[in-house]
Amino acid sequence: MAEDWESRWYRRRGWPFFGSWFTRDIDDLFKETEKMIEEEFRELSKRAPKNLVRERIMPDGSRVTEWGPFVYGYSITIDSDGKPRIKEFGNIKMGSRAGRPMLDVAERREPLVDVMTTDKDVKVIAELPGVQKEDIRLKGTAETLTISVDTPERKFFKEVELPAKVDVRNAKSTYKNGVLEVTLPKIGEKEPEGEHIKIE
Picture 1 (cartoon, rainbow, N blue to C red):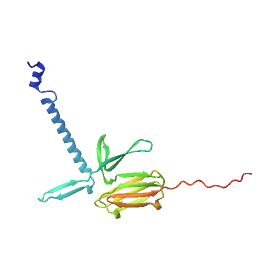
Picture 2: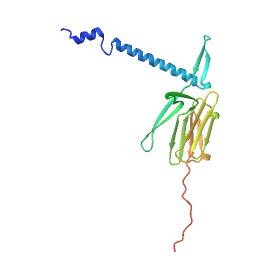
Picture 3: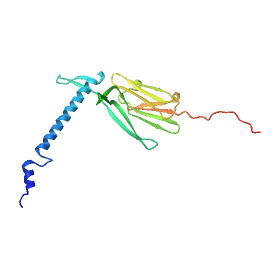
Picture 4: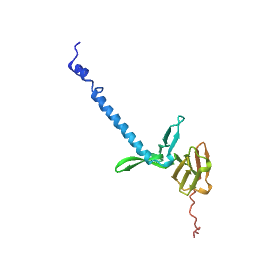
């Protein structure tokens, strides 16, 4: 069977998806992306807090600079009205400089926190890996709970807005395997007191 002109043309010049012009464009794209990532990491390392930059001596005697940990994550939950709620955690936030998006690194890491309510109490669960129970500081009001850790190795901070008013004096907390659990009883809404009215 004779080869048609279109097959001969593609055989000589290459198919559009695999031809030399295509691979050249892909190579340029990869080089440009690699350059952009390297530049972003250089900028990130300049802005990183001092406690996130360490120098380590390798077994062969060479020195290596390490950065981090850099943590970013998010959790998605569904509110009681059926709408999704996205909560970010970690020590990296998206910012901007001169109209260009940039990554900002905070010295303190925001822990992953989940808040649950029952009829009687509000439960706050926070992930605090690598810390001792004695290093955790909790401060509460009727409407907020502040969790903080400040050690040379680990720094965490989160202020949690509570979905109901709570009695902080009767709060209970436990810490086990890197997970903090705080249970805060809700303040019951008392009916307003009044005077009996005599019916004549």
